[in-house]
Image (cartoon, rainbow, N blue to C red; front, side):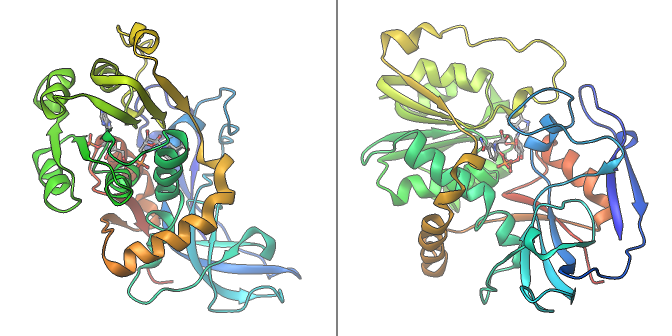
Length: 334
Ligand code: NDP
């Protein structure tokens, strides 16, 4: 099994030297175990936080051990009655091509004709569930709302915009970091307006896109995006605080938005959440999303990097914005 391990805790931007790739011989299966050949491994922004040795909602990654995280693969050998060779499973054993563990560590999932298995890491998995819960439950989307989402061409953001429209938002605005992504937002994902945050002041660009203000902000970015949303909120506005990727690799103390007083004067609600506390919503989400995918009402993109040995490059590419939609690593034929 080829596995990627964390060996140093990065300060600022991670580098290749913070990781190593090792080859591990797998023993014979013990009773109750299965061996799974991963097809796709996930890289996710939250992993950057787990590389730091700080107390958080998930414990830090252990140095010298294989990076854990979402993955999807197929059972290739089984010593368990629970899973058979050929079954498709998701799991959290992360950055490796082959994994061998007790069957209880894997969840069997159906194969859906025409849908790649990588969908279980994105549009049918954690990131789209994050969008669904954050928008509908945390921000409490209502019909007629004007919605702004940052990181809008990413895995979570591209789902937020589309779900908002399907659930009756009046106007959906997104920001992203390139002209190509902005074109995709309005051309493919059905956003009403979009802008490139690198083109100028986020506050000015948002104000121009939402002249009547916003009701909901879905924050993936933090920093000046949050400040811009605070400036554009209507009275009673709500924000789902999902992430702050603009800060994850910064070594400076983050600057706070300079207009937090709007929370008081406009009666705003800013509510944070982590999707791990909402896994019980997965069945309802999966059923609704399966319908949207089948009808074509939701479309999705993925950026695929080949080779488990390139997982670090994929992770760094994600942090640099090289992905459109979900960034995944294809582990290849085994
Ligand atoms: P994405 O697919 O959105 O990939 C990350 C994107 O972030 C990049 O493509 C890049 O796009 C953008 N980005 C990077 N640096 C900056 C910056 N300085 N300013 C603005 N944008 C930047 O990742 P995910 O969809 O997986 O995650 C999106 C957010 O959601 C993250 O903040 C993540 O931590 C959070 N999250 C939170 C969860 C929760 O439970 N609360 C669960 C899952 C994700 P661009 O080219 O546009 O810059």
